[in-house]
Amino acid sequence: MPKIRYRVVLDTNVLISSELSTSEDSPNKEIIQRWKDDQFDVLWTEDILNEYIDKLKYFNVQEVMIKRKDGSTFILKQISAQYSPLDIEGIEVGISREEIVDIQREIRAR
Image: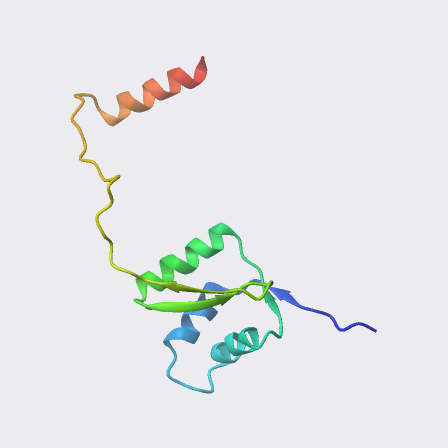
């Protein structure tokens, strides 16, 4: 009988707790180590990945390694924001937020 390959969705708390824990006996660290040892596959969506990133940023975790099913490995690393050439200053158009929303609704209704 073929061995079952488990696929799991890691709760954000497991990922964060494993990174913040100072205990080598942490169950969360063990889960992450088993993942790194390729004992199961981790599944995620864009929303889950965004939640991971938000929590890592909140807890000031500097970097986390993620391994894809195809074996490629990525490191999510927090870097300080830099100026983007796409950054532009806002402009004053003289109408309220509600007016902008009303205009958008009117355009969509057409």
